[in-house]
Image (cartoon, rainbow, N blue to C red; front, side, top):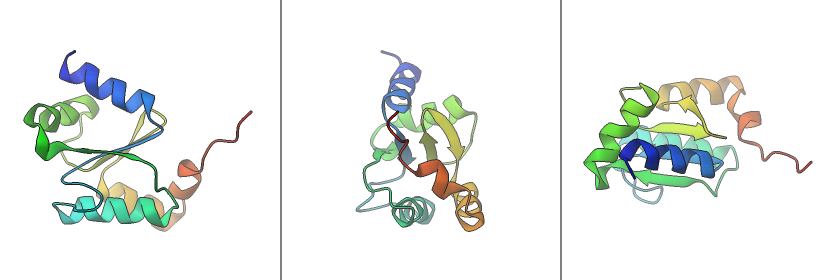
Length: 106
């Protein structure tokens, strides 16, 4: 499976995915830490975190996948939401919280 296939598979099969430096428990950069804090503030505890520092191919591949140069990157329902600055702006504007609410079973 190619790196792009692996990324696509992860993003599509999990509702909330954060590509970050480090882990939610031990973020390795301030931007990743902020992204985790924002997710938790929105009540999201069960998200998939991918530590890009563990795999250089994933680290470069995720930048290519979204055509976005920085990490962290948040995906919700298979869609790229943004990086740390965008998450902060969306959170402060109240736009991120509804996006992260679980979809009602219907």
